[in-house]
Length: 323
Image (cartoon, rainbow, N blue to C red):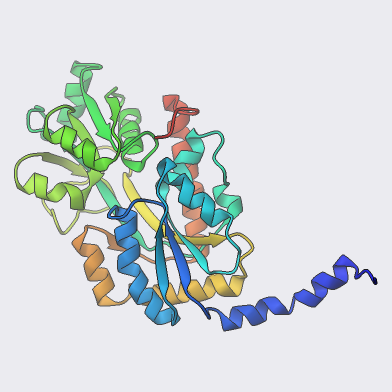
């Protein structure tokens, strides 16, 4: 049998990549949402998929893969074939926070993925139980400093975005409010409503009915600007503290996916994001539609990894159990 040198074989295969990219897509695309059904990642994926699918000309099938703070679905996407037919709807938790805590995270965010585009950002709102004698961030900080170790805050589990927002709050303001993890943001909100905990960061859409009903008090909003859903609520920056507490979302594909496929996904996604029904539905859940280049997405990942790396180091969270 004649042995074909590897270099010759690779040279023969090289022309196939552009051809495959030109034909892409010619079958359904799987979109991995590394969360349970009904959560923010899943909801955003289901808002986005129909419009993106229409522009691409192929169905996009949502595949919910929850578990290990998003690591299970994210790992699946990292190990997928680099052909553009498996897309991860990435978000901050498993991409830039969990890898800082879990020393055995089974993927490397910067090395194992090719970013496509950011699609959405959702600021977290700082909530307190009405029994807490604070109506502003400065009053909450003063209360926490006057009663060190007494106040606590809920989250949906160690390493999730709303947990790390609380740790960043502690670090930035110089207070020590104790973290109480729950198995999901929903149970955390239930605990806050019952007065079992004093404070919590959560998505604005989940918090809005409780705030409007007077069952919780909103203190400030993360992000760079006020929300049209609660225009009277100041941002954390307006409250005197310079830190951002926003979740963000954006599709990624496996490394080595051809550049032509990545750019096809990017251009069609940006077209889908311009559709009024997509933007309106995202606005309804207090999520802002955004778009970016793959390079801008990569730059965000680098900044976020640096930020949360500092928080994890300062708070001693490295090696902690991920729920």
